[in-house]
Image (cartoon, rainbow, N blue to C red; front, side, top):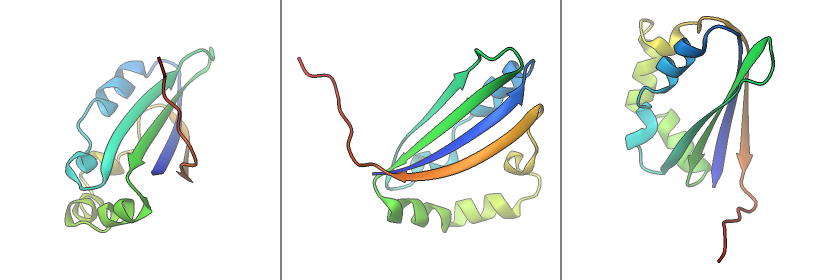
Length: 108
């Protein structure tokens, strides 16, 4: 499994914007090899909210097929697409990628 992680740090006071933006259906949802997307928020810090987006793919090749897909390329070419907008209150953004070594689930 291949996992993309994006960590976005926002100033406090943008929770509504964050929720509106990340509740939208992602374009990768219908691409072969996409498994799931998790959007997590850590709001404990009094100054910032940290959003971590984890996107799970069957493998690295599935992710690269998505990146090269006509839909993904068109999104990047469309300068009016929300992907190009700087999120309100955004302070920092990081992108990481991982190969999953192991994953454990609850056993009865």
